[in-house]
Image: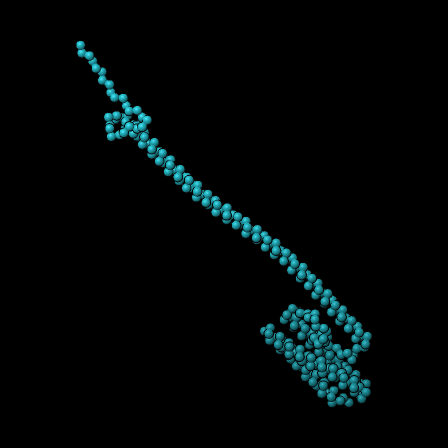
Length: 256
């Protein structure tokens, strides 16, 4: 004869498992990421509640084991294993949906506590001491491996950061050299512009002087030509250094 407490706990577990099934069916239809996250949180709470009820069911079963016959105990144990199996299937679904929503984040500082138990639901009462020790050693090995991977990632990150800093420093020095070269080029261009302006002024001055000299020479040539052509023209002064033209000589004849 099954006790009323066991029947009540079994009914509660069935209700929670039914709610989990309906919840995951509803989750299939949700497209929004934030709503999916909230739905997964609600389903996680229900899985915790189901796990607690299964523990109570197992504890009540052991307390009343001597009151039941062998067939009844076997049936109750089969029900317990079936409930554990169904809960594990929902845990696997939760894990798959969580990995779809976000990259699987591993919190290395969180020990194998409640979250670990949700993903690997089992009852300690069904395991021997050796199994518990083996399970604990396996969990510690996994934790050590995760820590080693994290250390490797940290070292790789430090190396990448060091290389990046060195590259940035080299690029900064390169940029400084480029700026200095640009300053030198700017100064050279400025000096060249000044020299071009000075040369332009000198060329203009030389052209003016050459023009004046040309005019003076042409004027002197013109005066010389006029003097030669019309020596009686008194309007033109004698050019210094130029002898005046000889006067016309007349031949005097002596009359006898």
